[in-house]
Length: 137
Image (tube, rainbow, N blue to C red; front, side, top):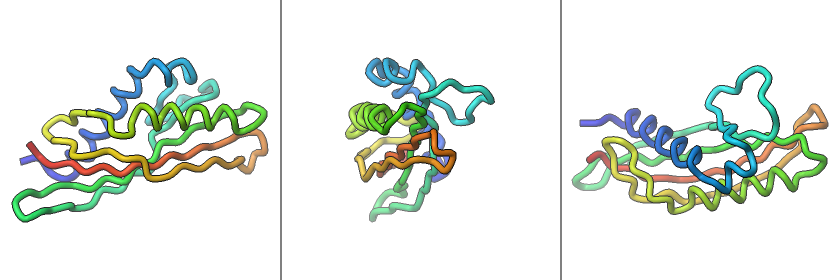
C-alpha cells in the first residue's frame, strides 16, 4: 500500500510533468521549471515551493491532504510578468485531471496567490498555493 509520503512525491511528479507540457506556461518561462535552481538560471522561472502533507482519512480509506506552493521569480520592471505567470499556473493546475502514480487525485484547487518585491530590490516573487486531496489506488 502506498504511503502518505509516496503520495506527496507522486503528486509533485505529476504536477511537474503537467506544467512541463503546458504551452501557455512554456510561452512565459521557456521550460524553466525547477525543483533545484541551476546556478545561472535565466529569469523568469518557476520553482516548486513548500509542501505540507497531512493525513486525510475517511471511514474506509487513508488519504492525504496536500498544501503546496509554486514560486515565480521575475526581474521585469514591475509585477506584471510575475502575475501573468501566476495566471498561467492557475489555469494549468486548478481542477487539473492529474494522475499521480499509485494514487487517485480527488481534487486540486487554487487556494491563494501573492506577489512581492524581494529584498534585493530587483526581483519580484510570486507565490501561488493549491490544496489537493489524494487517495491510494
